[in-house]
Length: 217
Image (tube, rainbow, N blue to C red):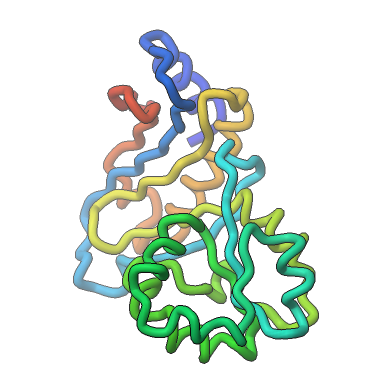
């Protein structure tokens, strides 16, 4: 798949585009075939930094110790110092609120175990716990500004329960080149993680939030 194929599909999508009261996202759907999801070699989970932000403001919450708290309060949308973890102990309602409000959670490495005990039972099943694969478990001297900037462009490319990979690659305000750059990288990353490369790809679709999908030829 190359950029021109993506841009051609975008052109088809835009022919029937209808404005909504919100900005519609552009989603890439890679439908798969000849995979056994019961076998671990068919599954993957990759955090990918795209060339361009998708247009959505990504909100970040930090679990920080004394060393990182001042920086976290400056760079992140919300910070919980480890001394305040006790306020959330057993309070699933408040932790669910956090899960709904924030896209990524980061943790200072030496408070991660403590954070897992308090927040893990809620954030874990929702796949929101700080994930080392995304660079979200950090040392006390980490540069959070760079991490938060990277997370603004980070998406999760995975296959676990469905024979499809579905990833947001932009929104209606992005240029066709930006959307195409993102889509090609997501596709290439997915294919590289499939057991039989592109032979496991059934078809590739592109769609707006409220549109019917268009096949990328």
